[in-house]
Image 1 (spheres, rainbow, N blue to C red):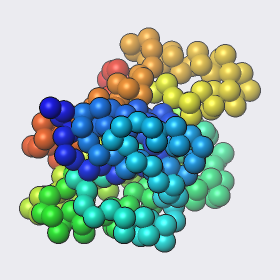
Image 2: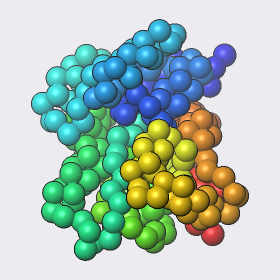
Image 3: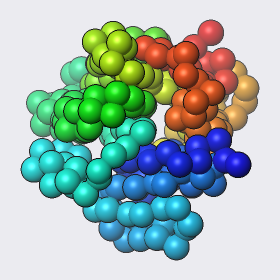
Length: 245
C-alpha cells in the first residue's frame, strides 16, 4: 500500500527540479500523476514512469488551463510549482522583470486554483499545495526583490484559500524551501559573472553546510498530499536546513 494510493494529482513545472522529484515521489506512493510543463522535451522523459501522464501546459495562459481542465474529471491534489527566480534589488528590477515574475510566480497559481477548485468543491474534498519560499515574508534575502514579493504573495494566497474553503473540505498549504540544488539553480550560478564565487555564496548562507536536494523537498510534498496531513491547512511548511533561524 502506498501513502497516496488512488489519489489523482495534477502538478505544474514537472519537467525538472522539485516538480520532477515530486511527480516521481507521488507516483512511487501510488498516485495517478498528471505532470504538466511547458518544456516538452524534458517532460517526455517522465512518460515511461508508471503512474505518470504528461501534458504540455503554459500556466500563464488561461485558455490553455481551461482546455486542459476538461481532461481532468476529478483530482485530489493540485500542486502549483511553476516559478522563476529573478536576481536583483528593486533598482535592478525593470517593469518587464516585475511583470514576468508576478505573472509566473503568483498569477499562474491564481489561474490554476480558479479553474480546478470548483471540481474539488463539487467533490466536497480537495488539497492544494503551493510552492513558496523562505525568501518571502519569512526572511529578507538580498537580490531577491520581486521573487520574494511574489513568494510572499503565495503565502497570502494560500492562507486566503485555506480560510475561505475550510468548511467545504478544502485544504491549502505552501512549501517554503531554502536553497535547493536544482538545474535551475545551477543555471543561475553559471550565469553569474563569477560562478565559483556564486556557488560559494549560496553554500555560505546554509547553516547545514549544504543545499537541500529536490528529493528531500518532495518528501515533504508527499506528506502534504497524503491523508497523514489531514489536520494541516493554511500553513507555510518551512524546509530550509535552519536558514531562517
